[in-house]
Amino acid sequence: MNSVQLSTDLCSRSAAEAYQTSGRVFLPRFFSRTTAVRLEREALAIRHWGVSIAPTGIDRDYIDSARAQNLTPTDYRNLCDLAYSQNGQGMAHFYESISLDDERFDGTSLQEAREFLRSQSMIGFLRPLFGDLDITVTSLVLTRYRTGHFYSSHHDAIDGESHIASFVISLTRNWRLEWGGLLRFPKRNLEVTTTFVPRFDSISIFQASQTHSVSAVSPGAQTPRISIAGVVKLVERG
Image (tube, rainbow, N blue to C red; front, side, top):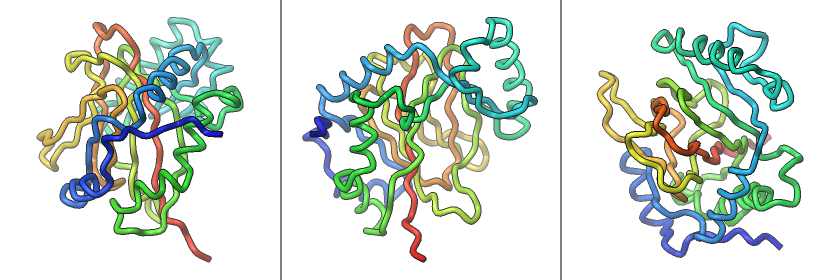
């Protein structure tokens, strides 16, 4: 039996009203407190993460956890420098991640979260935001941002794909504004109009077409910024 529970503060109708007005919504509590604490504890205990980097300059844009274990501190700094050297010249990013489908999560609360986020309960919560369209949740990834990690301005919409929205569930307690790692939405003139701080157990939902970024995490951050990221797609009918 899945023990994942949602916050009793959630209101799908008010979330839908906010989303349909601006194409994004921030909800300060998503899971129940017990569920969120359990997920945070398991995520913090993960020792080996993969590395996501773009542009690459190497043979792939994801270094799996087995290969990442062999990176020396110098290797890691070089990867960071590579990503920063291209920042401002197109989409660039540098952070750590693991698919929630990774078998190491089998039998854990993170597996239960994965199953819940793909369940009809989650679909039922999300559908009013999208005008009751037929949707599904895919591409669930656990992400970790530490000092120097960032994601430059980009959008998630890909021509020919049915990706209509993205969401991020924050699993880090006591995150401070000055530590960076902020989800930001700029205008076309690059003026930031909205900033979502990664408050513990919050969920940010936004249109795939909206330009957004994650600001660099500062050296003063005393804990990693951990989140679950997911994709909302239209169900394609043959």
